[in-house]
Every structure is written in C-alpha cells, then in structure tokens.
Image 1 (cartoon, helix red, strand yellow):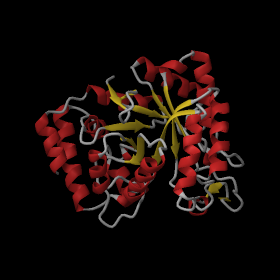
Image 2 (cartoon, one colour):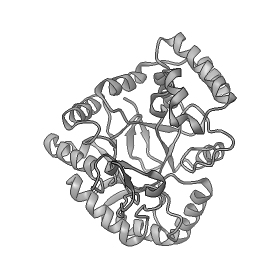
Image 3 (cartoon, helix red, strand yellow):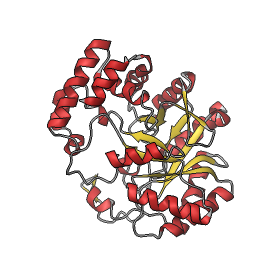
Image 4 (cartoon, one colour):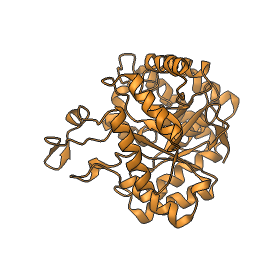
Length: 333
C-alpha cells in the first residue's frame, strides 16, 4: 500500500485508512482483530476511532468500546510504533435523558447534547481516550463535531496545551465548514497554535445536492480551499456512502441518498457503472480507486467495514487500475 503525507508534517499515512467505529459493538471483537491484522499485513498504518464509538449500540454507555478494543489489540500485537493512531473528542452524549425511545436513540435530540469542545471537556476526553487505548499519546486528535457554542480561541488553546503536554502529536478537525477553517487558520497564525493537519469530512464520488446544508459533506468550495492549503489533508469518511453504489435497490431506500439524489447524481452513477464494467470491478471499488487517484487535493479514504468480506472487497480497490481517460470521464460526468 502506498502512503500519503499528512499535511506537511512529514508523517506518512497509508493511502487507505481503517475506520474502527463499530469494532467491539456491531463488529464482534474476534472479527475486528482479524480485520486489524489483515490491514497491517497489507501495509496499512492509519487507524481512526473516537471516544463516543459506539454509545448508540449499547444503551446506558457513553461509548469507548472501539478505543478499548484497539487498546487490547495494540497490547497483544506490540504494534504501537507501526501505527498512526487517530481519535476524536467532543461528540459524546453525557446527558442521555430522553434520548433513548423504545431501545433506539433519537438523533435529533442526541445532536443537541454533544459534550462540545470546551477546554475542560477536551482535557478530560483526551485523558479518557489515552487510558482506554493504553497509550501515552495519539498521533492525531480531532475535534469530532465542530462546536459553534464554544469560542474557537478556547478550543484551540486547549488543543495546543494537549500537544504541548505530549498527549497528541497533531490535531485535526471534522464536520466543519470552510469559513470556520479559514478562521481557525487565522487564529493559529496569530497565536502560534498548532494548525489542524487533517480535515475529516464526508466525501465520495457523488456530489451533494445544490440545496444541501449538511456541514459534514465536502463542498466544491471546500475542495478549492484544500487545493490551496496543502498543509491540511482531506480524510474522507463514508467514501462509498454505506455501500450504496453497488445496488440500485439499496440506493432507492437508503437514507444516505437524501443529500445526493439529483439528475447530476444519476449521470455520475451511469458513468460509474460503465467504468466498473470496463475494469471488471464493483462500483464501490471504482469509487475508492477514483479517490485514491485524487491529487488535487490528495484524499485518504477511510473505509469502515462491518465484516471481513466488506473489508476484503474494499481493499481490493488497491488492485483496480483506472486509465487517465476513465478518470477524466468520471470527473466530468
């Protein structure tokens, strides 16, 4: 597996990151361990988790399942020095009163209860993450959900203190708009605070509808910002949009399509299907291969397989070769 430089840090991360969100909950531990082993054997080194993963799969918890599992795996394998380890804070839901209804979380309520990115919250969160992971530091620490209710100055100072204390080497930001990134950049320059080197957003082959207001999806404007600022790398979560590219029937009923469904999306899907047939791969694999070819800006797709079969199918994208002509057709659709 090839590597990509994380911003301008000199740190090399594998061109595919492994999202560990559902490890230890939806994905049982034995299967998760096999997945982690296969990933590093294939040359992967970039693991992504968060302190809140996965509270919504076990009522009465705040999460921490994924971090704890990774901690056990790291100890058993002795691979800490081989791994670029990323985790996140700010999106736990400490107050879950009224959030669970008949055993199912209400996300409309949950999103109003995020812990946020205040200084005290972040300091407590990183300490909790390090304890569960069983490590002294993480390589990358994200603000998981951009917190509009806390002054950016407070958050950035807290993150700078976390880096200065040696608890994180670098910082990142997720689910954030371009105007906020510009303001973060200004404040970091003015105060000498560490700049986020990774921007983790939802990014795939389909482009969001013109009327989408989802702050988490990369826009054309954000792509332009990232092209102009190579000191920040785009880490793309949900790169295959829950696997909807392979089956029209799945797309027709999947909630993920609500932000994308449009005549433009249908045009892109038609070209995607044609290219997939030409190269003998699945549409999901072609999407990943297309993202791996991206250089303007560079993209690290973050796969989040639930099963070993899904993992193997995603990793097979490394063997898909797209011609320049096919890439151009996919780009232009």
